[in-house]
Length: 231
View (cartoon, one colour):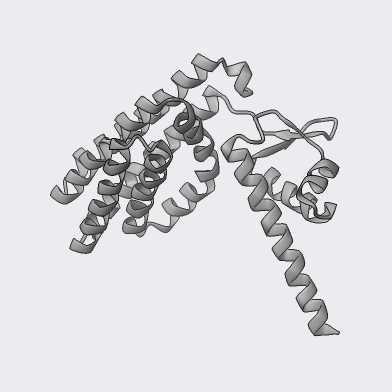
């Protein structure tokens, strides 16, 4: 009986995790739009699961501020806004500066080779205007710098913010092709400063890189109207 209970618990956990990942991805990609109402019963029917894993997933997404609950108890997808974008990207810029400085302290030849490979993939996708992959591998470039930094606290903070950052990245990747391709070229500039081990210039460039990303996001949101996007 204990073994059956253990297997049952694992199955429930797996279902909860799958539902959570599906809902999180739909929110990040915009399939579930900012401010869209959410009803547990409808989500349960749509995902063909019981309401328990849906409820558990919603609680986790509430904790991560991707879903919000109104005073009346009704659930909706968290809104996005220029104010939030400024806050998130501002914090990210500071963390990126710390991460790249620490990464330069730890850099070795293998690190350089791996970063060069990522930059090359980004450039190939730039030429073919494969925006989704440009964004994806651009993110991998930054993630590798975080790994190089070996700064556990910075990595934890960035991980906590990542879902929110991705929501804004997806806006740009879908709508503002030119800005994505232009910003992607900055990865090579960042890499050159890592190779030179010039912390000051590297910090300056990576800060500008994040600020440029923010400007692209804000421009897009203004073009589409903030109210439309839930701000």
